[in-house]
Length: 220
Ligand SMILES: C[S@@+](CC[C@H](N)C(=O)[O-])C[C@H]1O[C@@H](n2cnc3c(N)ncnc32)[C@H](O)[C@@H]1O
Image (cartoon, rainbow, N blue to C red):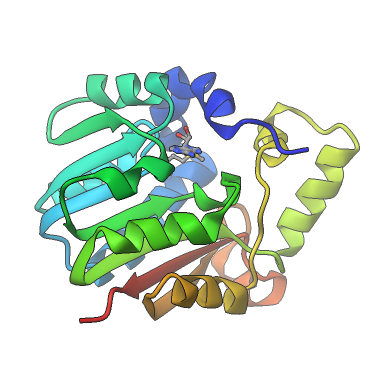
C-alpha cells in the first residue's frame, strides 16, 4: 500500500537541497536546466507545484519569472524559504491549486504526480490555472525502465533507505501513457524527453531511461 508522500517527504526536508550537490539528483537538475528550461520560455508568473525545497523554483526565478512554489510539506516550504531570496513559497496541496485566485504563464510539477491518488485530476487542475498558451513541464517515472524495474524488485526484497521513496510512489507511465495523461488534462504535448540519473547517456535508448520530462501547452 502506498504511504503518505507528504509525511514521507516531511522527514527528508532538512537535507533535500543538499541532495542536489552531487550524483543523480545533481545530474537531473542539470538536465532540467540545459534541456527542459530552454523549451519553456520562462517569464511572467510561474508556479512550481510540489516544489520541495525550491531548487527548481529558484531556477525559474533566475530565468526571469515571478516564481511561486507550493508544497504540502511545511518542512519542505521552511527549507525552501531559508534557502534564499528570489521566489515565494507557500504550504499548499496539489488539490488546492484550483482555489488560487491567479492564473499563470507557466507551471512545473517535477517528480510529484507519481505520488498522487489521482494524477489526471491534478494535471487538469494545474492546467486550469494556466493562461492560454501557458506551458507545463512535468517529470514522471517510466514504466518501461529496466533500471527502475530492477530497483522495485530490490526494494521488494528489502533493499535499503535509498529506495524508500518507491514505497510511496504509486504510478508509472510509458511515454505514450504520459502523453495521453497530458492530453486528457486538456494540454497539447510539445515534447517528451527521457533522462536517466544513473546510466550513461549512450545507454538510454537501450535501457529506456528512468524518467520522462514532458513539456505541454494549454491551447489558445
Ligand atoms: C520527490 S519530491 C520533489 C520535490 C521537487 N519538485 C524536486 O524535484 O526537488 C515530491 C514533493 O511533492 C510533495 N507532495 C507530495 N504529494 C503532495 C500533494 N498532494 N500536495 C502537495 N505536495 C505534495 C512532497 O511533499 C515533496 O516535497
